[in-house]
Amino acid sequence: MKRYRVKPGVKLSLAQYDPDDTGEHKKNRQGKEQVKTETAKLIGRLDGLQERLYANATRSLLIVLQGMDTSGKDGTIKGVMSGVNPQGCKVVAFKVPSKDELAHDFLWRVHREVPAKGYIGIFNRSHYEDVLITRVHGWVSDKTAKRRFNQIKEFEELLTENGTAILKFFLHISKDEQKDRLQARIADPEKRWKWSSGDLEERKLWDEYLKAFEDVISATSTDCAPWYIVPANRKWYRNLVVADRVVDALENMKLKTPSAPEGVDFAKLKIV
Picture 1: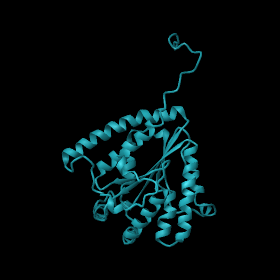
Picture 2: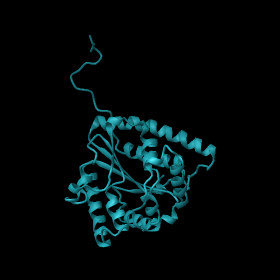
Picture 3: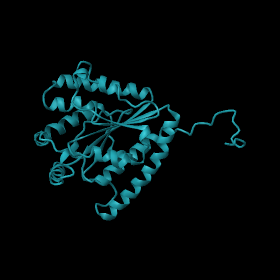
Picture 4: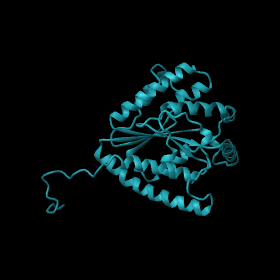
């Protein structure tokens, strides 16, 4: 899975990443079932790792999910984090800034939502919206956006130095796949609530968004807060990649179950 990691200082070209990639697994039913089995095992491990994270309360994990419309941010959360105790996990979706938020610097509202020690935080869209949609639509200049690149890197460095591990995932789908998913959204009465009239207008800016993503990922993938380009045309493989990296990050914390309170003889302790 490390091959999907964007190395610091490398100029990213998303054209070099196949959104339909499934690694060493076949693109058939057998391959899909194998991947689902592997993912289930990872999710099982995630449960125990999260419990240690919560019990120790010395570290935290921040997961950032970005991607084009319909790339599967909601589906990733549902599919990968299904084994996580909701008490130790918080999902935040950043919408259009409020009047109060606009009165502060662009990272103010984000810093308030960073996971506390012992918790996993998931940003469904994130502080990166302020250098993506704002730049594509010309609401901020290129100069302002690039200045924010450095501010974001410094912000993420601050978080990691204070015990927060950061994983950033770009869920990479093809334009044809997006078309199919938007069409499916229209066709399914149970999914029409997700439809927005702006979806088609944003789709017209596909190339502009790809360029904006390439620029920001190239500038902000660091050793302490890496970006991963996740092939996301096939949801089952997308979930495997994300689950693998999340488990790896938690295992690298090398957390152990906290010691029991001193002075208690548990062998003789009886509850009456």
